[in-house]
Length: 153
Image (cartoon, rainbow, N blue to C red):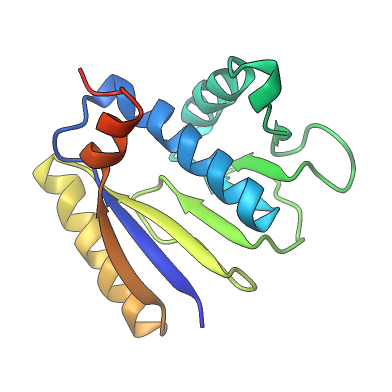
């Protein structure tokens, strides 16, 4: 069964949300090996790419933007809706888009619940859709993770 985790971003400053997600991506890559991150747009993918490159050398995460890197792709792939995405399956899907992505073959889906009301409503709709697809869902208060990692403002 596919498991899904929604990170509730209440209390996490907006400028700290992508760094926090970098930590989640790193943990899941180490645990499961292959991660595809669906960003809302190319600019968000590039911002996440830059943050991943800024990690210390001993915490490097092998990643690339969709369409770049080796032909078989890197273990962590940063995508956006218009990107040419390889057909390979990934064990972890991280969703930063307002809609739910395809997740065939994934073992774990990571999603977020933003603080803004309109975005929160879209997260509720994704939550319901995942549940209808048979995904076993749970939530995590991201502020607890951020506090542990000293990311709150």
